[in-house]
Amino acid sequence: MNNITISICLDDIPAEKITKGTNGKRYARICVGEMRQPDKWGNTHTCWMAKEKEEPIRYVGKGKIYQPRPEHQNDFPSNLPNDFPSDLPDKIF
Image (cartoon, rainbow, N blue to C red; front, side, top):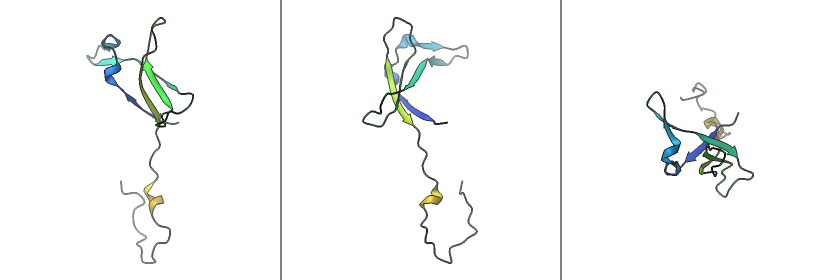
């Protein structure tokens, strides 16, 4: 499963679309969909406010599939010296 990171412009969310839950927190219903083609910044997804039938679509952000950084072990050179310690942990974290 791919993760998608989205940046939402909070200033574009109309006040009437923000509801208060029974827990006292504020919520806004957002829809996310895949774009037909990536934009010039590589965004592949867009998001908009959930709407009623007669309302126009109000776009509030864009995003892309999250690409994790390569494992650190791939960054090591392949020609290590013979005296390189072999008892190092696989992962530091």
